[in-house]
Image (cartoon, rainbow, N blue to C red; front, side):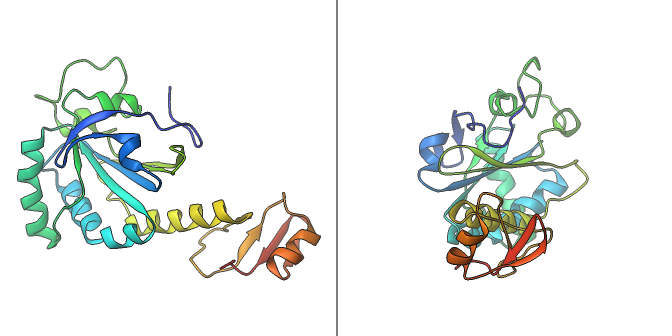
Length: 218
C-alpha cells in the first residue's frame, strides 16, 4: 500500500554509516527528511548528497534531521562520501542507510513488495523508483512526499520552504499560497471565523468570499 499524507511513517531498524538506528527513536521530537537514491556512485545523486551536506545547518535550525538511503552496503557509502566531498566541498555528516535487502525501499513503496533479491547486481535503472523524499513530523506522520525521475536533480531549497510552511501551518490555523516564501502573507483557513481571525491575526483582507489573506504570524 502506498504511503499518503498523515499516514504513520513505517518504523524500521537499519544499518547506517552512523551505526544501527531505529527510525522512530532516531527522529525523536523533531522532523526527519528521508531521501532515497537508487545506487551509490550515480552522478545526479552525488550532486544531491553534496547539496544536502551543505544545507545541514539550515535543516538543524528547523529541528529537522537528514537521513539518506541507498541500497548499497555501508562500506560502499563511506567510499562514495569521499567522491561527494571532492565534488561539492561538503562533508556528508548525516547518516546513510544501507538498504542491502531492499527492506526500507519496499516498506516505503519505492519498490514493489514482490521484488526479489538483494542490492547485489542491481543497476540504477532497476532501482529508478527509489528517488523519493519523505518529510516526517514529530508525530511520526508523513507530512510530504515527492518522487523524482533519475535525470532530474532535486531542489532542496523547495524542501526547506515546504518545511517552513508545514511548521508554520501546524502552529497557526493558516495555509500558504502558491509560491509562498517566509514572511509573505498567508491564508486564513476556513476553520477560523472572521471574528476569530480579527482577534487572532489583527485583521485580514477578504480577497474572495472563500479566500482571506493576513500577515504571517510571528
